[in-house]
Length: 231
Ligand SMILES: Nc1ncnc2c1ncn2[C@@H]1O[C@H](COP(=O)(O)OP(=O)(O)O)[C@@H](O)[C@H]1O
Ligand SMILES: [Mg+2]
Image 1 (cartoon, helix red, strand yellow):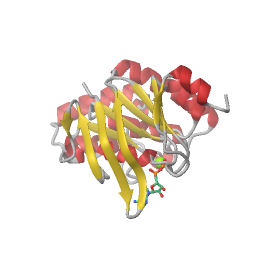
Image 2 (cartoon, rainbow, N blue to C red):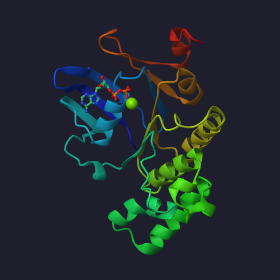
Image 3 (spheres, rainbow, N blue to C red):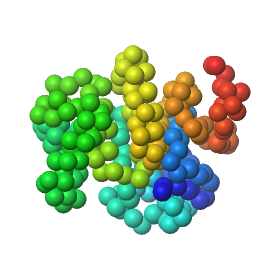
């Protein structure tokens, strides 16, 4: 179970208000996509869920309990970044294993988990390679595997496909949709690409810059069709 709720959440950086009085529910098990122009606060929102950028005020709840005082490592939430954030000097296996070692997971269990997730993301043959010898798509799979191996309740993905070329991006979209079906966990996926949002989401959250319009909302698929000028 992983239902995320924002209650009257505000976030400012000094004088700059990025998010003001946000009330939002992200449903358990759904593929929710946050879409909005660059700079509107998408990454800020994900970082608050992950616990790596606390809210200025308000409350964030996970399954009804406030997580404001829970450190990032104890939230059962994994985040995949746009730039992969892999350790360049470590092999694929070590990158995937790193968090497990930190959490003192025993060696045989670690081996089992690594075998399992690397099979799912198609990396079994690459475990001894360094990230620099992999393609962009393969690196993103390592980042995904590193998130999956922790068996989190929530996956946060911050524009994870934006460094890939169009063809690979289209293929990875389908893989992520399949992965979500398989795992049945809560996915919160950020993109600035409306077409990508439409292709992947169960629910779309449309974010707009505060100074442009005070409105933020959740739309059903059909409503987004109406609101989306490019389609
Ligand atoms: N650490 C920070 N310090 C100051 N301003 C920040 C910081 N992080 C983000 N911002 C500002 O907050 C706004 C939202 O940023 P961000 O969440 O990264 O947007 P997005 O991910 O939608 O592109 C931007 O105006 C950005 O400049
Ligand atoms: Mg961002």
